[in-house]
Image 1: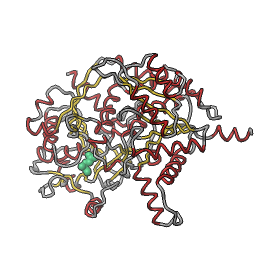
Image 2: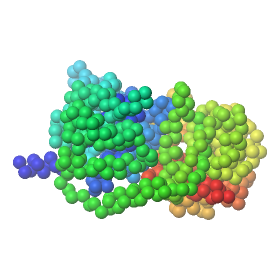
Image 3: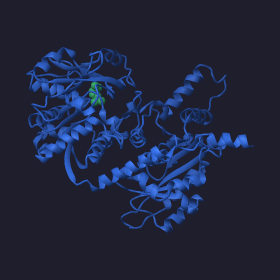
Image 4: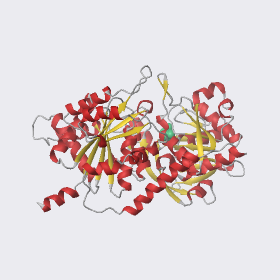
Length: 558
Ligand code: GLN
């Protein structure tokens, strides 16, 4: 009996997080916040996001619909929630942390073709939950807690088998599986009263799937009052102490503190028994203290700096959506907050610049970012923006496409190569300063689009004395990539002669990874082939973003 108890307590606890009423509730932030709290209490925590899409990964999803494609260090193109997890948890995640329905069906169908099912009728009802549980068990290895975010909203047809996987895991390990359900409490303006019925219905929907929530987290504009909590407690058959609130707040990094103010960990451990091992608390507590300090610093930041982000993935029907750039925005904000600066982000639509010119949009900004992108729409607008910041000596940070277009702009307007371009946009350009990587061309010709770009971590050597080297304080860095085109080496000499600094190359010198302008001609002009925005964490911003914001801060003082 004793031995059995010991085994049981050592096992990973699975915490499933689901959402009801509406999508876009902030399940990712809630999951990341709870993971951070458990980590700060000294436990080993891992997270899995399950997406119900048939895409194998997020690389083939439209950023306007699904938001940013977050690139993990192992090259996985994933959901932007993994970006939240990394920023909160402060560590790298990857393939073990992201599961889509597409991946599962691919695995099951490959097995079916190989006769691995011994000729039975293969039923999704059995195989999808079985494969899901296998995936989760792998991710759970060596962790005290595995948090599993169930994508979508309870009651959707598409994710029902993932809820079934969770239910079956609970049957197998009743003492180690728990459910946190997020609900939205709306206050319709025509009523002026907070309504709980949709949230109650989402709880009943969860019950219909054979799951009873162990905890509720209430989302909404405001905190629910006692009356509303009582109704929810009755619907969920829960004591009130297991119902928490996470009202809208800014920044999202405040959420762990808001939960903890309600005694989250103490209540959580009333239901979930701790794994036997005594956690080493001190280092983790220090992290919580650092977190609290940074939130205080944000609240008291007085200096404002206006930074423009010039892109094109903004309009979705009648609404504009900035989720396509979430890591860029978070990196910028975090880098600013660490320096006691409040950033004001100005969105500049590249297509509007093409019609109206850059000056109108950039007159009062202290720094400009051109982030990653694909295709020809808005490209000339972005190039005009880069020309404007170069000529007016406004701090500039170019990310991936923003680096490629900076090279094009420099070639055209400084090196005199008039019709220079990237062959992605103009394959006939007389000066292809950006061209496709040879192995990439083959992939495109054979229509292999999924997960075939140059992806994930690559090493880069930094030039002594460069702005980038000064920012990183290191000679060798690893940053994440996602592109098919690159700087054409045939133009290295010519552009260098015209004054461009190549400040980062692959260790074999084969690929140009960073370009900049010397400090003598521009205060801060740095553009990278990689995406530094993917390595910012709340407690440790990426060094290039720090350096860029610092330069923008100085510029706005002038
Ligand atoms: N479209 C460019 C390429 O494929 C840049 C990609 C990006 O910005 N992520 O190389």
